[in-house]
Length: 317
Length: 298
Image (spheres, chains in turn orange, red):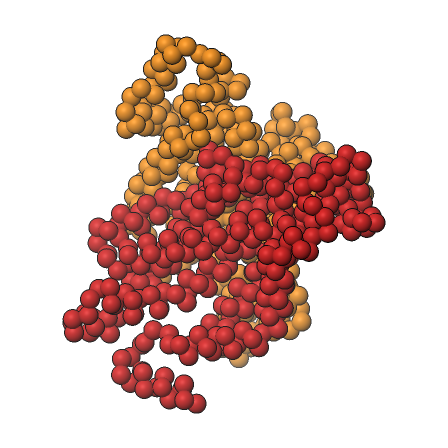
């Protein structure tokens, strides 16, 4: 287990370096001069040269990359071009907001998805199973940004039950678990939960149906074990893959909630990224993407290790 | 009957052979017997026909604006599905929108399947250093959450059809290349490939006769499941303002514009999303049907 973990961590290092190169390169493939958003209109050639030098853009790309990397490793992601605040602080505040929304959404998806998956797996081939499968396929096909809009129309515009957008009072002083804060979270969390919920439902259904067909389950039944005890055995086989999916889905949501955050104006990473793109705030853009990609890499690592702990067969592969 | 006999003869001669023509015939026959897949195929065919014959079907000009007719409700005389925020006929724009939405949804998957397939086969067959270089670069792109990568690329490259397609291709290539690579490695280790090489067959011949026929099935099966993702993601990029630019009719872009009007004309705002949903759902169900039809164990 130790060797496997070590090997898995070592394998992650070149990936992380590759990710940082891609994030660095993003700035250089961006349309237009990266300096255009810093320089005033009609800047003189001397001024352009001066700013170019100040930002280090006159150096070879490799030198620029290494300088940038050295700063990033120390936690210095530069300052936002728009409001001159340090990028790291802005990104971390957004990550916190997205993380809380994403966690609630994945938890919701886990509960509903597992329940539906068990129901379908235990009734495989029947009408109930077909309904659950149809719901789950709809769930992965649906444009979730559109679902968000539909939910806003129903619950905010027509029924006037829940707020349409924003994060309420907790936007400025962190999320607090009172009704006001929760009411702002319900619609975006439900919207975001649909995809992981559907994926989990399908996976649980498949595993439960497979495991139930295996001989050891019949043996358990033949031994006279109660249905409840057999259920525990079935779930123990299904759980590792479900936990892995949950971890990966949470990591996907951190980077993938941009559409839903835009619909609900939720001040998370997606919202930050969207604003950075349209105000051409390249340091924020770069910092957000790098942070999210590194979190994604880290979560993948943790998921692999945890899965290997549950399932010793993986280590040998 | 004859296909069974010939399949047995094949096994006797060379062991595990690549899927023969009769394999694909069987897949086709099973698909024809699957009502859900056929229904979805018919719907997709209707959408494709709508895209081709848009100028003949659309009741009015999708670009003609009118300040007097803004946001007419669904069911207005002459405007069956109402009008948008600039007074343009929504039905006509949805019909014309099939063109860009289908192109943006399907072309990234087609291109990525070719690129990813070639990269995967080359990496898997060549092995060694070439494999390491190709697959480690692919791993790096695989290390990004897919939506984030698409948004980041489209964001820095700027809006436009070409940039959207390029961004999505880059999102899909890594997983497709991984599928192609793992199958190629499996095939490369088979005895019949060693035998073919020993009898003097060139690498190209082995790839053409043994690797490509074996890779085709799984990669098409996987790629078909990506079309629905691609349609939702492509329209999503337009929805964010990173894909197609106004005034072109495209479902994601229409959804974003009409979103501002949910308090005035909520039903109008919902329509473009229904189109995205139905199209994506049909492609997903067809992909499910294809996978089931290709599963020989059934």
